[in-house]
Length: 446
Figure (tube, rainbow, N blue to C red):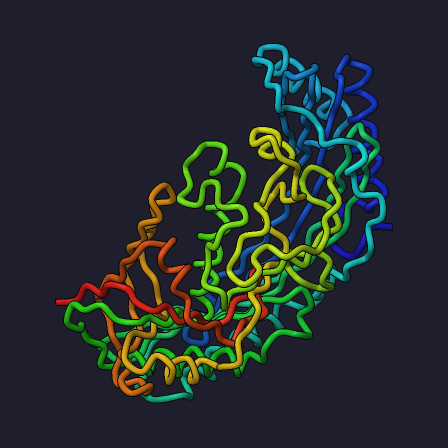
């Protein structure tokens, strides 16, 4: 039987995947890889106590990659009928015949394929009724309004339930797949009125809904954060230390991953080219990849190429130990895959001994950044410039909210000038990083 809500069993998805491999081989493909997936979910939004939207989603798909030697073709369909799937394989083969040979194309070596796929406890269905989901969102929003009469409006609170499963296979004998879940609660409210309005939000997301923060805690945090932004003003242009709050520190970790990923490296479009074995962060930074952590969002026994994943240390005392490479990008670079086709798997930045307040005390005078705007990152040069908002800090204590500023620096220098990592990492994503204290950045105000 299929799991509750799914249209297919895992066995049926695997059977479809196996049939695709057999048909591709029969039609002359030298190799083939396929992914068969389905997913469904619902999202319920409440605004000012009234139901705003109720959305349902359900989708499924098959992706087929075939090889004719070093020629590659790809096609996909959302139709699971045998006729449609065979037509998709034929379409991929047709594309491959007109594609130029690529010496780096092809499946990963058979010896690298995942053979043991442990249960990483990634699927926790949340079978709640619509009325219950609406009630959770209302509790969330009510808690935000209860923080202060100054919170006079709301952009809404939302309950989200998502569940999916897939099967992946290739002609090197790999066949794997599993179900996953992702559930969340969020709230966004507005404090003040007229020209003094400030918006803030908070959310939590987990595999298992039982581990979510309470709706009251999420709403209260959203309300308190909006209230704290009251009276925000510009500051004079300066060059000072900066603390990136934990939710934003994760974005810097994402910038790093992009810069040392295969695609950017073989295209020579990264400021961290040829950085393996080099000091890329300050010595206080240690980054580990832990793909087999139970219930985590980045957990998997294999990457998108079917290659077995493994624990590794990416950065030790600031020194880069390894890139993020797929089979293809590794071949382009003359290296070996790191089992990162599809991205990184559970990055963990080792926490220091200070919480956010401790980092502010260490900083003394400077800027706490709690919101970033725009996408001003140049990965070729490392230049970094983003619109920002947050709080001005004097003597280690927040003085007032700050808005309409720009922070600028260079990622290479920012990474090397990390003075401390906080112990306040949030568990709600695949990348965990506490707040980061950076020695110096330029702040453009007035």
